[in-house]
Image (cartoon, rainbow over all chains, first blue to last red; front, side, top):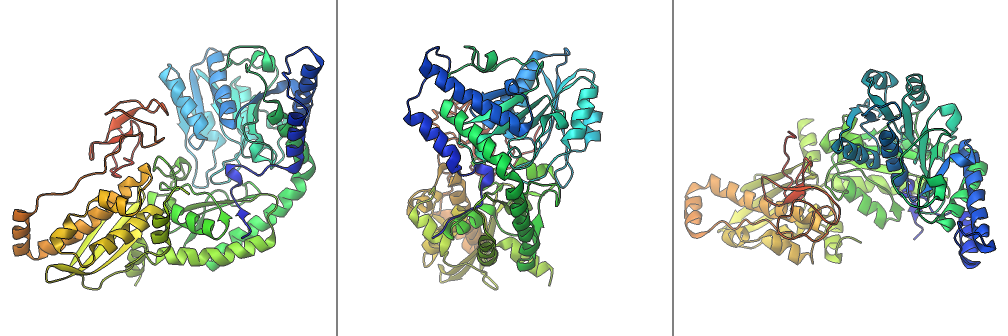
Length: 392
Length: 193
C-alpha cells in the first residue's frame, strides 16, 4: 500500500540532495573541523559552506548562525542563554502560553533559579495579541519569546509587531521558528528578532541538526561549555554530516519554497473546505488564513484522536494528534486547551501536515477513507449518543 | 506498534458495541479530561449476564479493553463477573503499554458499576452479595515512571530517567507528575493549587 505521510510537524523525509551531501562526506572519511591538517580543513569548509547557505535562507550573516543538535536545544540556548546574560539587569521573562515545551519547560527551570516568568494568553485562533505582550512588560523584563508559527494549530503569529515593541524598550526578543523556516519566507532583519531557532528536519534536512540565529552583538551565556566551536557559544565537535545536510536543505528550500508552498496551500485549502462538507461536527483549529501553507488541523467532535490516528495508519495515512490519549503524559496538547478548546473536543484533535510529495489524489483518498472511520468510532461513542438524544 | 496484535484485533473489530434498551444495569465511568468514557449495559437472567453492550469514547486501548471485558463477562454469574480484575483484562489482551493500564481499570470498573446498578435496583440481591463477596477492586500496580517507562524503586519522588518530579495520586496512590492535572493511572483530576 502506498503510504501518505501527513506528519510534517514530526519531521519531513530527507531530500535526496541533502542525503547525497551527507553520504558523500561520510564516505570520503570524516574529520574534525577544528583540526589544522588538510582533512580537518576539508570538514571545516563543509561546515562553513552550510553556514553560508543557511544564512542566505534566513537573510542573516553566516557568523550569526550557531549550529545545535535540535530545535529544543536552540530554544533552550536562546531563552536560558539570553536570560542568564541579563543584558539590562532584568530577571523577568515573558512567553506566550502556546510555546513549544522546550520553551515552556526552560521557563520553568529559570523560575526555579529565581527568574520570574509571565505567560501571555492567546485568542481562540491561537493568535498572540502584541498589545498583550506590551501590557505584560515590566521594567525588569529582559527577554520575550513568542513563536513564529505553531505546529499543532498552524497559526502564524504577528512577530514583526512584537519584535518592534521589544526592540523599542531594549528587551531581547526570541522567536521559535522551527515550524516556519524553510516552509515560509523568513527574513531575520525584516522580522527584527534578536534570536531565532530552526530545525533541519522541518524542511527536508536530517534529524539531529538545527540552529540558532543570534544577532551580532547580542550576548548569551552558553549551555555547553568547552571548546571554541561555534565561536565559543556551543562547545562540542560539530555534527558535520548533519550540518552539511542542513545547508543543502536550505539551498533546496530557497529554490523550491515558493512553488511548493503554492501547491500545498491549494491542497490544504481543499482539505479545509471539503472535509466539513463530507463530515459533520468538524472544527478547524488555528487561524483560517494566517497559517502554515502545509498545515490543516481539526477537532472532530465525539471521537478521540488516537483511535482515528490508528485507523488512518492502517489505511496508509500517517497523521498526528494532540489528544490526551495520544500523548504519553495523558494530557491534551496545552496549545488546544490554552485556545479555550474544552477537554472533550481537544480529545478529537487531528493534525494533517503535508510534505512535498503530496498529490491531489492523496487528498481525494483521505477525503474518501476518513469519514467512514469517524462514523465507525462515533457509532460506539457515548458522547455522540448523548448528543443525538439531546437533539431529538 | 505500541499495542499487541490482540489489542489491535479488538480495536478493529470490537465485540458487543451498542446500547441495550431498558438494561437491567448500567455503569458509567471516566471523564473526557483524561480521555476515556465508558458506559456498560447488562441484561441479567437467573443471576447470569445474559447480554452485555458498551459504548466507549477513548483511545485504541480503551476500545479494546471494553470489547474484551464484554466478552469475558458474557455468560458469567454476577459474582464471577465482579471478580474480573483489570489485571485479568490486561493479561487477556496480551498486555498493555504502561501508560494505558488505567484503561483496563476503567473497563473493569464500568462492568462492576453496571452490576452494582443492577443490584441497587434489586436490593435484596445486593445484601446477599455483600455477605459473600469481598471487594475485589485493585488498581494495576506500576513500578515504572508513567511518563517515560524508566525504572522506579518504591515511591521515589523523582524519576531518575526523565527527571520529572513525581508525587502520589491522592486517588489511586500511584505515581504522577507533581504539577500534572490528571493522574495517568486512574484519570483522577485535581485542582491545581
